[in-house]
Length: 356
Image (tube, rainbow, N blue to C red):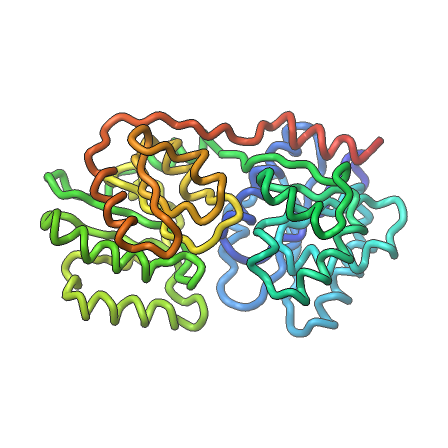
């Protein structure tokens, strides 16, 4: 890279919140005159993420066949590219990249912590505590996440807490496509996420079994990649639906490149997660004006969702409370969105500060 302001972004091959935030930050940097390259780390499966890259970025790919091979390829990619800044946003990639940082004087390393440390094994937590000290900046998503990072020994002046941004123009455009639902009086609940234990879709199906008795003309749509963990969670959920005799009311749509028409046109958006970093799907649903029923698995959710104003909250792992929240939220029409996304100026200022 010959540009005066260049960033090499290591991004995993997936379409979770961490990846979408990295892409949005890249758009901000491009607008500020940065030269951007995405290096996709592929762990197998179809490469879906590169379809969402901005047109003006460079692209490369590393196929992870072994741990040693992955480290070696990341090292040579940084050496070949020689950017001003290296940026990553997944803990397992952050760990590997920061292990290599001492070999690259003059290159700044920025990592974004995409999840809470208590969600990972203690040995990995210890490893992150050691390598995060090598970062020039650690981006935290919430104040509580910042406290966690400080508790493992990361200096407070290295941590920048910036809430996740929202790509408002893209979401509005995509949400404006035709509704997947017919015009009728049905109450439709929608949840979006990969089919992983973390997302708590089993809790949601338990809750919906109660809701469907109260609202017989309701439906539940689960949108996301069903192949995660070799389809184990998907298999469990299908079995639950059959046992509850809800096969005609619960729909698994599979992965959707554009889930926003489902969210925009649903009655209630549901977040049933056991843990999150900062749930993009929830804040995007609020942006689209949808009432939400959410499990308050992390503190910020209770600051984003206010009972009776834009949705209702439920306690972690509590399907009864989630069912109650879903029922109440279906009666909301107009909502107030209290989430304030991270501003372009905050991210651009942070990266420009790496050049000083």
